[in-house]
Length: 65
Image (cartoon, rainbow, N blue to C red; front, side):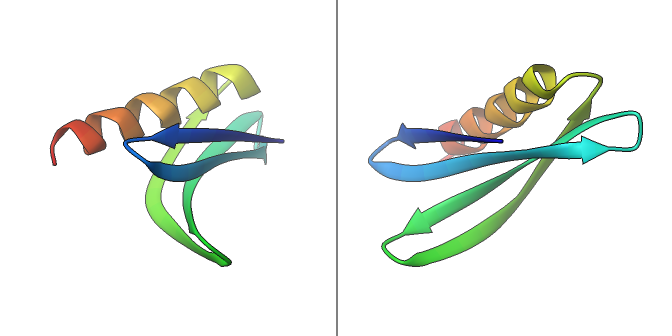
């Protein structure tokens, strides 16, 4: 599953996949045809919780700049 976000004029995707007994979400930034992994990952028991945790980490990172 994937969730698209636009924050501060930048485009991001949160990608989720089953991981062990729960879910793992990671964040990519898209720049035209290119994609860059940001190194932001989160795990949780449910896909929604993993996605939410990854999004919170991304928002905190963007506030630091």
